[in-house]
Image 1 (cartoon, rainbow, N blue to C red):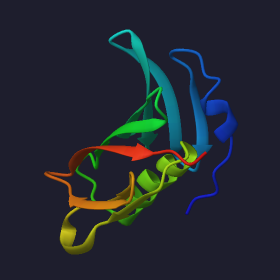
Image 2 (image 1 turned 90 degrees about the vertical axis):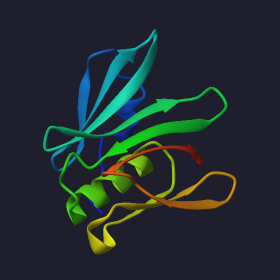
Image 3 (image 1 turned 60 degrees about the vertical axis):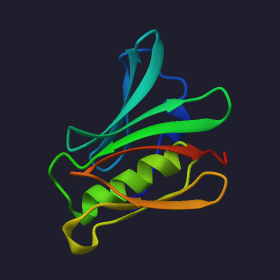
Image 4 (image 1 turned 180 degrees about the horizontal axis):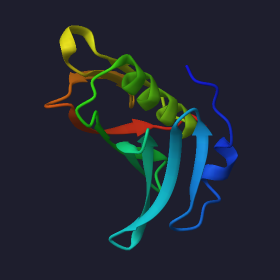
Amino acid sequence: MAKLRNIDKIFTLAGGERVTIGHNRTVEKTPLDGAMRYVCRLHGHPIMTAALGSDGHLFVTLDDCGYCTRTTAQAMQDFAKAFGARLGVSIAGGALSLRWYQDGWKEREAIDGRAAIIMDRYA
């Protein structure tokens, strides 16, 4: 796991602002259909987008951007942790597999390196 920093700044970002939370890991707050979402980037590639629900859930879209590597998997986990969610990512067999917490642990394999999930936040 990368050493995360500036996590407290994520939730105080204004629209269009970006903060670095780890080595080559940035979070940018952008408007989407009248709401705000967070675009999480690794080496400039958007590998996770997140929106916070009023019910405490985190609505997440993951995309390996064609780079199904350990670094990508770890960065996805780091971003989820920064938002207070539990996510496990595996790249066994060259396929992205996810394990996350939402009213109990859930698992599934990503399709073509992409997946959309809803997670509970513990923070």
